[in-house]
Structure formats: C-alpha cells, structure tokens
Amino acid sequence: MPLLNELLADLTSGDETRAEKAANALAEMGEEAASALRVLSHSEDADQRWWALCALAQSPHMRTEDLLPFLEDAVPEVRQAAALGLAGHPDETAIRPLIRALSDPDSLVSTLASNALVAIGPACIPLLLDLPKDAPQRARINATRALAEIADPRAIPALMAALEDDSTIVQHWAEEGLERLGLNMIYLKPE
Image (cartoon, rainbow, N blue to C red; front, side, top):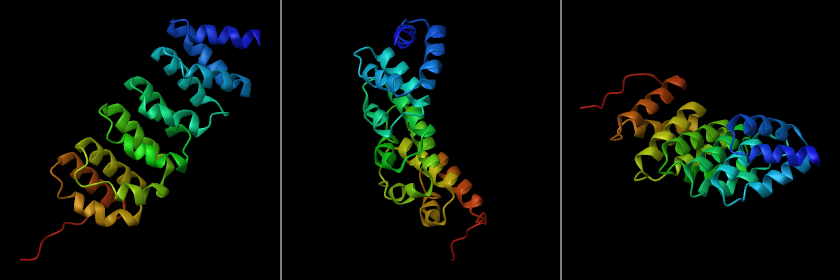
C-alpha cells in the first residue's frame, strides 16, 4: 500500500517525468492500483483525470466501462486519453459511443475514435454505414477512413456513394477503401 500511495502521489505531482514513470508502474500493478486509478479518474482536476486514464488504459485490469464516460468529458485531452485507451483495448460495447465521438469538435478525439473503431473491426460496419449523410464533415471523413481501413465488402455501396461527397478527403478515403477491396477501377456513368 505505501508503494501504491507513493506512485499515486507521483502521478498527481504535476511533474511529467515522475507522472509518466508512475503511470507505467501503476499499470503493471494489480487490481488495487486499477481501483485507485478509477477513483482518481473522477477527480475535479483534468490533469489528474488524464493521467489516471493513461495509466488505467495500460493496465490489464482496465474495463471498457472505465473509459467510456470520459468520451464526453468537458476537457478535450481527457476525451483523447479515453479514445486512445479504447483503441488499445478494442471492445464491441464501445462502438456506439465511439461512433458519436466521430463528431467530436476536437479533431484528435475524432481521429482516435476512428482508430478505435478500426481496432474493433468488422463489427463496426453496420453502425458506420448508418452514419447520417449530413453528419459533420469530420465524422464523415473519419467514418469513411474507418470503413476503408476495415476493408469489409459490406462497405462497398457506402464507399461508392462517398466518391460523390463534397469533401475531397472523404473521396480520398472512399477511393482508398475501394482499392483495398480490389475495386480500384475507373467508374464511368453511362451516357
């Protein structure tokens, strides 16, 4: 217990070097450390929440539900830590919250949510395909990127439709996805 308290003190010290070492050490400890990190993750201090999530995300005792609520934290860096942690621990129960995070106003949160969806894989396809056509551009870009990287044939119609999107980045990822699926042909409309 004294070591745990020392590591938690280092984690919340405000000294990045000490905090990083403590996060790594706490992640290697057992359930007792994970439990303490869960408590710390609800701190009023955003920096403490961030460090707690970073350490917890490295722990084999991390549970998906430990990170999910933080995808809606008021502080973008905390949302980023949660999304990054979920990317490292793919779990289908996180799909819906990650789909919502694709529309996050912070571009890094949206990108990390897309990475997490790619890590989860084909189970995401149905909900990615249900993303509204009028979703924010950031969400359309990252959803199309996820579809491209997962490379599931069920996404072909959506990727074909995305070739007509107003965003050239969405178009790029649609082309990339079709290429990964072996459909990198030139498409002509009949006259």
